[in-house]
Length: 138
Length: 141
Image 1 (cartoon, chains in turn green, red):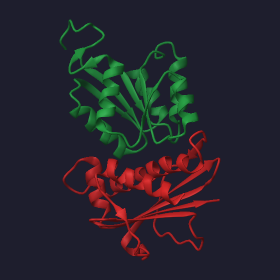
Image 2 (image 1 turned 120 degrees about the horizontal axis):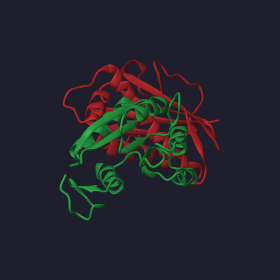
Image 3 (image 1 turned 90 degrees about the horizontal axis):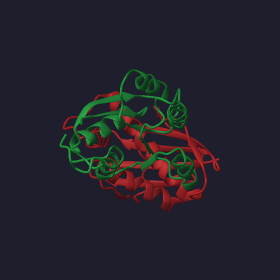
Image 4 (image 1 turned 120 degrees about the vertical axis):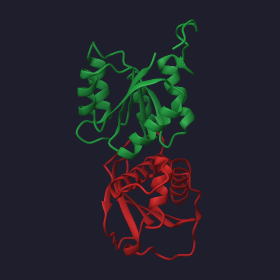
């Protein structure tokens, strides 16, 4: 199963880095969408099937936390796996965010950390679904 | 405070820029005409501004390394890289300085054509890289 992933970050450089990391991670990707704020991301989520979203927190127009709240309140999107990729280092803040059922990756991050987190949340590892018990090759 | 700033700056250069700075204690200021500045304002438990200044010779290498490309990126993208760098340094330094349970809000980074301040920074990290120098200044209100 090829994955559709959405990257939400106001920094074009960071979106580029994350996309490059995804491409070299060994994941089979169908589409990698990019949005530069939460509002753009919501529109993309309404128009496209997305398997996982990688979301920055500090963004103009609509920040990442507001985006996560909208997603969790929408029955069609509520189960979307979300990884927050942020400079946020405050333990209190990270605890608040994790309570919204998201994973957290701290910037700067090692490529391996991003890869392992995506594998974990999508149930896909090296092209094989770990959730399927390994019976299917993708 | 200064050690926290040095740690955050060196970590960011190493992990995001694949560059390996050392502390630079020669005391010389960077020339505004030969460097680029970016600032990040923050508020929360403490408020203020972080300013990252890098020599022009550093920025193309920093941007190319961060983006994983061979050639220097376009100017807009280099500015974006510098802003993200300042953002990451600030986000890492503040909890080390004020406490990991404290919450801060960072404003979007702003490129500053010329940075002049009569005010002494609360902390400063001066770094030497193979390609040139970089300074990080933290101003706490």
